[in-house]
Length: 331
Ligand code: NDP
Image (cartoon, rainbow, N blue to C red; front, top):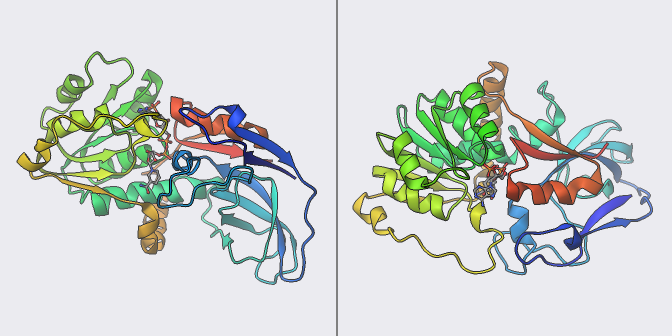
């Protein structure tokens, strides 16, 4: 059984040396337990925060211990009547190939005719983040002008599609022309800014948002946040979902110079953590499944192969190696 442990806490951008591949004998199940073989695991930007010592809304990872995170597994041995051999389960025991469970931390997957790994993306935590962030926190209304940063990622690509479904004009920012092309040609996004090649992010955003922005779905922070404060319309809403620009920072980032825009424009800026909204997950799954079935929502995956590649997949999130959901396939 191979697993990835945190060898040391990264300073700045993580690298392979911060991770360690550890082999252990396969555990035997006891009465009431099941043996789960992981099929897919998720790597997510929030895990970077857990690699620091700082206490946040989730506990830090422990140095020398196995990492964890969202994953999908298959029950391969069972002494628990609630889980038949062959059943697929969602859980938080990622970063390892096998584990033993008494079942209390396993969620059986509903059969929705989608590949199981969709429950780590469009039908899982990132999809739910997009949905609740845009509709509940961003208070999206028909005809709103919407801006999405990290727009081609797991969360951003779903935000773009929901906003288009709701009749909004959508502009996104991404770090490559291929991602810009994907958003415009496959997801129907109205305009895209490549923040890596632009000479002036703020004026490029203004150029592509001639009527300003009513809802900003913020995944990046830093220069993006400051630029958008200037572009927001009066009474606009900013759903503060993530600040990936700052997750590897080794010094505090300078604050936006134009914070007064929040006051002058009467903006609502609200941070949110998706797990606080988990009671509406069943309603989300129902609506998202309908959109998928009607081919109104699609998704992309970037897949690394094998537990050995999990650190590389995770590190790749911070240089935009993924389009759509970053996943590791373990079989
Ligand atoms: P993504 O699939 O969007 O992957 C991260 C993407 O961010 C990369 O592909 C890259 O795309 C972009 N990126 C990386 N570094 C930078 C940078 N310095 N500046 C600008 N863009 C950058 O990840 P997720 O969809 O899982 O997460 C997106 C955001 O949502 C993150 O900030 C995450 O922390 C947050 N989040 C928040 C949740 C909550 O409950 N509040 C829950 C889930 C996610 P590119 O090539 O375009 O640069």
